[in-house]
Image (tube, rainbow, N blue to C red; front, side, top):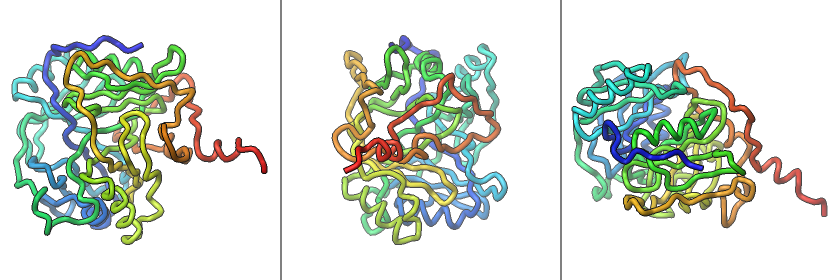
Length: 334
């Protein structure tokens, strides 16, 4: 069902690293991420805000870029590579396959490479960043949900298997996957030895469904929702708190002031050992709340942040998830 994985890829991606979002009001977005989620500001100016989680030493995991006309889009998702020489190998690898690859200068990062995957997802690769002190035991600095670190992204792709094969060639392994019959619908892929760095779900794409931060305690998930309500973002608490089937994590999904979706959740299990087999989930019998809770609203399954400059393509067949709206319509009358 799954494509083969290259366990000795041409260059070494180590983890999900950072995401760049466009926003309409920098102060409003900063307020959401600092005071509801609890991220800390590393640096900022009148057009850009660089944020990181409390447990992160690298300069930024979230970059907010002011763009009044193009707000609500994602510029790039970032991955770290291990060595500078991996960037040179990546440049040649993408160019050899006819895929975009160009060197760019990015503040607070070392050499940085912009590339795109076969469906046009814009990626940013770097080996180094400036560092700042970790603040995970500076409890007097805690705000909001005390978000600790960026963990993963979920993107939409018109063909999950084809894009899964691409990232498998880059050494990404699957922890779990979602299928129906002989059709791969979702791939939960990782590099860092937990169960997720990049999730690929079949839908109109490329688009960024969400990015996710870990929290230390389950009550921090409720705290994120509480602070969203206190600060006037309560309508943006879109799904949860709940428990996933795949992954098994407790979670909540929130929409920021520009509609970007961010998840807070309570971490993962370990997957680094090569003998561990991916877990299969049957889409026909699964709401991603596997144990309890109602399905998500239909918009959770279909709405996503577009990538700047990346045309979107629908899949051969649009998904038909069990949304909350559909679930309620199918309930028998009393």
